[in-house]
Amino acid sequence: MSTASGSYAGRWWRKLEDGRIECYLCPRRCKLHEGQRAFCFVRMREGDQIVLTTYGRSTGFCVDPVEKKPLNHFLPGTSILSFGTAGCNLGCKFCQNWDISKSREIERLSDAATPEDIARAAPSNGCASVAFTYNDPVLWAEYAIDTARACHAHGIKAVAVTAGYVTAEARAEFFAPMDAANVDLKGFTDKFYKDACTSGAGGLQDVLDTLVWLKHESKVWFEITTLLIPDLNDSEQEVREECRWIRKELGPDVPLHFTAFHPDYRMLDRPRTPPDTLRRARQIGLEAGLHYVYTGNVHDVEGQTTYCPHCQAILVERDWFEIGRYRLKADGKCPDCATPIPGVWTDHPGSWGARRRAVRLSKG
Image (cartoon, rainbow, N blue to C red; front, side, top):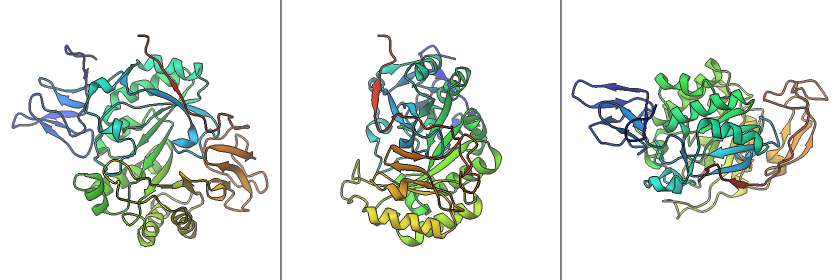
């Protein structure tokens, strides 16, 4: 519901005894006086309520390969209509979408589209799904939820690409209409979340709680990504602890992606992640008992290919975003030994490849 100013009436807030309003959508729980904006910048107090200032407005739409999200076990080879808004509820110094997530200029939101516009645009552009990405959809949850529901009415699936930094009070509503998610597990220490991501207290635990909830309380297909930054979160000890935690708390079948960092935003002094670091991290994950560990942002056919964990047969061969051999059917069973391979599969892969195509939804 739009307000008099054109903003959208937000949810997940409460009035406090001292006159402030608390936003409890994310763990920061920003407490606002009249006219103040939350840390994310796009949620603000307007009168006696919280409003979302970016509902229906985007930094632009692109058709991407679904593997770019990254999702390797969800409709391989298909295209996905991707978009984001502005702002973020974390302050990662290494942000690789910083021009969007750190934007303070509403004029940056150049493309306007209703949830129904997006739901219709996806199939007309040959997309099987829509991704809420580039900046975290948690902070524009109302828009993401409405769009996901509109997509379902058109037979289109909804994907959230998120840091998982959301409260227990809002988590179930946000993920309820999502078919899949990629959760960005930034690192595996509180210090990394505090120093490199500018999180509030408990940043790591908040994300771990989201992952456990997704696994045990939801039907959302999800995969995990960790961007390995040289000398910050790439030690073998930290990688091993992360992999052991995933194996213990989530089981062996949640795909884990280790991806390469490139210097950006406020971390221009760091070198790119060496491919050998990613390969070693993948090996650590496999040694920890994880069945599906991938490398990303590098050319590495072995590290990006899906193998049967029982007989080691090649099931889905990949080179970056290109699909090679594809040997699965919709039932997701290994054709050689019938081991179930968790995911959302089809009899034939899509043929979108590595293309990225910008599209415009605005009529003006």
